[in-house]
Image 1 (tube, rainbow, N blue to C red):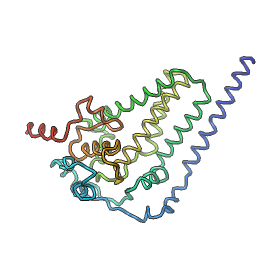
Image 2 (spheres, one colour):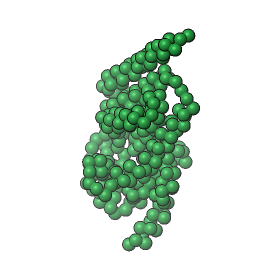
Image 3 (cartoon, rainbow, N blue to C red):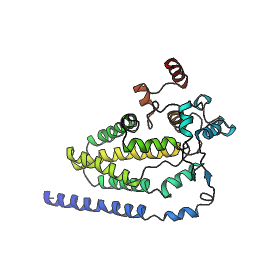
Image 4 (tube, one colour):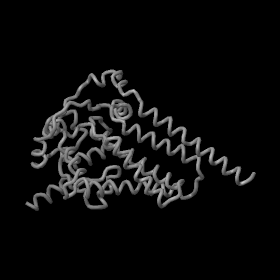
Length: 290
């Protein structure tokens, strides 16, 4: 078989690889979001957001939540309570079960997750039309690890920056809201972010390796998007589970001190950077500084 024939076959396979991308993107973008109304009881069960974090505190201390959160987590500092007084009161359908949460994430009015899913699966389908190498698994894992450390760095130095800028103001609104709310990034931000990362990777890596790295990065980003969304809902998790520990970790960041517990997908990153004190340790440090 000639070299030209081999290249011709690879070219045809690459072109076919674009088909799943097109079909998936069309499917998710034109998904009938109004079908949400057909979900029994989901839209009918309107849950009123509490207007202050003190109401969240009462929820956390209620018998229904006493087994879900350690008592040390629910103590609120004065600054958090004062910030809560200006929180935005709104009506949201906050999922209380995993099935409701999945339905909202995948078929709700927020198209960002669906578009990101389409991009990731389309990129995977296209990637398998190109040659694989031993570098692929290494780059895939490296991109995921990079995302874990990026979460902490961006959260600390950009979203909680000392400088006033658009991203910080948006994140402040997120903190001022009731802890239980729908928290999903807009589609334009997801697509722009991932596209920029892919272009940067393509500048330094061949297309196959750039795709592999982008898939790992986007997959980690999608996992973060789901995780951050689910821990801000009222879905309950098994005591001691990964998801429950993640939720406790993030609750501390929101309700106790925004300068600690900055990691997310891998909370152990906070331990590495010294931003994962126990609540008792933080209270002692706070008292010593007064």
